Image (cartoon, rainbow, N blue to C red; front, side, top):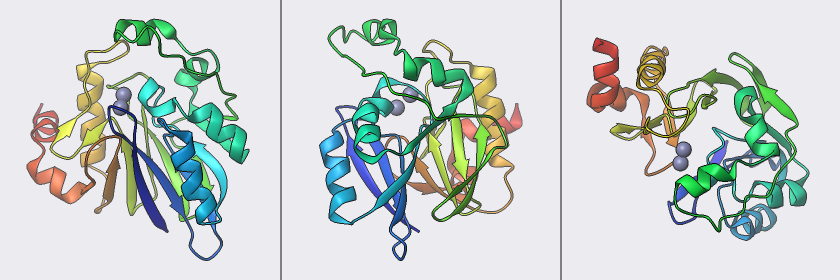
Length: 213
Ligand SMILES: [Zn+2]
Ligand SMILES: [Zn+2]
């Protein structure tokens, strides 16, 4: 599996395009903005996108969702707790972030995810890990080698817990869960650089605090 990182939008959210170089089958994680750039990569590499996975429903992870869905026909997958915000975007959220003019196009959710669901994707089966704390329906996608961690786990950091639906205690529980996954993973977070789980287990103060709590 190859993974292309496309930083999008003014918060530089990481949109990922993961694909099998032989079959050209692909999936996209968090189409956060600038659909044209994401679709240009898909087209240039002649990819067939079967799924669009969302780690959560914050605007900076979904702004290009409706356009990318329309262009690819891919199945949109999001945790059941956040499916409502995708189909009827909550503009109170963007107003509270002082972006009253931001308009999020609604998109159809094809699959509501639950903890433990297994998705058959290019690059193998990915397990859905429900990891609340940043939002109630935050998830990570894990295939045993690669972990798409959304805004739950970052390099040397974790997602903020002070937005609506956030919870410090839930975040600690989620970080503990990731810490205790067996083996290492390459971690592809929702923002900033990729890292490894082994590195975060040693250096991530938030994760270490959670494990010791
Ligand atoms: Zn977020
Ligand atoms: Zn984010």
